[in-house]
Length: 149
Image 1 (cartoon, rainbow, N blue to C red):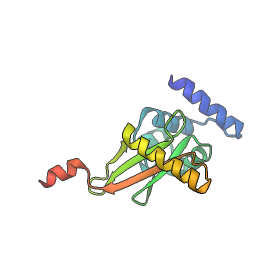
Image 2 (cartoon, rainbow, N blue to C red; image 1 turned 90 degrees about the horizontal axis):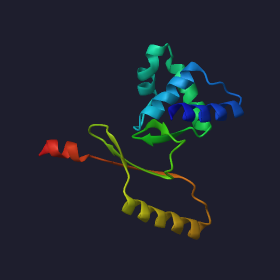
Image 3 (tube, one colour; image 1 turned 135 degrees about the horizontal axis):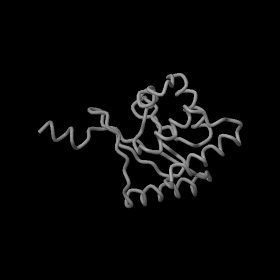
C-alpha cells in the first residue's frame, strides 16, 4: 500500500520536473507512517540518521507543500505539516494545548456539520467558493487540566 502511494507522489514530482530522491522518499515514508503534525525539526530528527540535512528537509517541505502533497498549519506561531494527499478531509480542526504543546485533531460529525453550514453561509453571502479550511483552537487540554486538580 505504501509503495503505491509513493509511486503516486513520484508521478506528481516527475510531472513538475522533480526527482524522487532518497531524502524525499524518507520524508514521504515518515508522513505516510505518522498521522500527527510534524515541524521541520521533528522531521529532521527522525531522518537525520540517513545523512539528510536540515536545509534539505526545509527545501523538500517547500516542494511538497507547493505540489499539495503536504499541508501546512500554523499553530502557536509554528508551522507544522501533515500529509495532504490521500486525505479525504476538507476540514481540519485542531486543538493546541498551550501547556504541554499537544496537537489534537478533532473528528466529530456534529462539529463538522456545523462548520459546513458556516461554509455554505459564507459561500452564499459572499459568493466565494471554499475548497479547504483549517481551524485551530488554543487552550489547555483535559490532561493538563486534570493535573491542576
